[in-house]
Image (tube, rainbow, N blue to C red):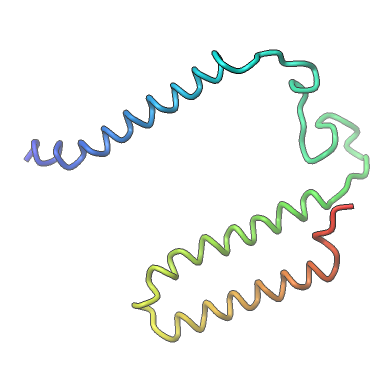
Length: 122
């Protein structure tokens, strides 16, 4: 029983060990090979196009957040497409139709954002 369990999980353990070695090698080599000369600009905090510590009442451009929200929406769309594509043979015509409605609503939203100029970066 125990040997079967070890045999089942051995490939996962080997994969994790190889991944850890590759990750540590990449990090180590980046410190050895790359130039390590950080300046004040590289060490400064950067968030959404304006200084991180500033007046809380200052106006800021919401385009950064709009682009981030659009990215999340379309990223979620892709996350829903993969399981749908895998199970397409099992869900039938109703599953196909519901996904086409979902994609249609997202496409209409994308066209609306495009026409309103939300994707224009001035």
